Image 1 (cartoon, rainbow, N blue to C red):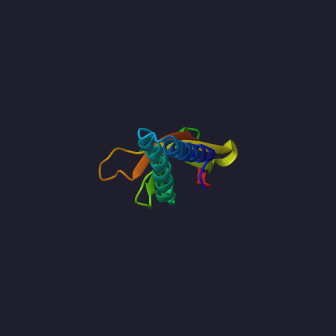
Image 2: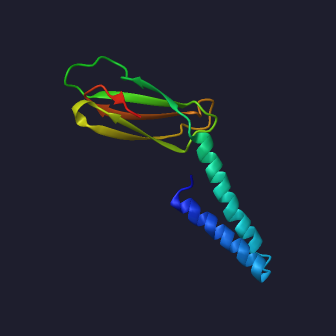
Image 3: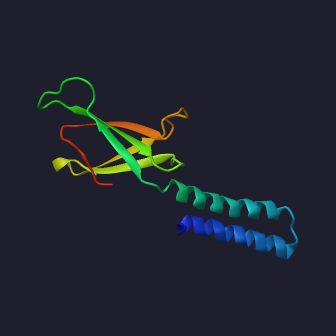
Length: 129
């Protein structure tokens, strides 16, 4: 389904196309076509990127002592062919409640389907989504 913004752009594109046809304005056809193509490409991109991720966690290097902050490194690997520009990982961490971490793509190298972020907590996180 399209979002409200997507439906508005689609309606605007159709409206501009109808206005171009009704008034015989040739310069409006490329504008209408561009608006309609943007909605189509965005819809296809979201459908291709809507795949599950593999989550890998690490506890950083070195020895950890009780009471110290422990860096928790989470790495997401896309299972689909298209990686979204940004991903939000929601997890419940002990008594700290739900935590949200934003991930961004990690360059364009061979590991371009991986994203990394680091957060610090004193309890082991459990991914909920």
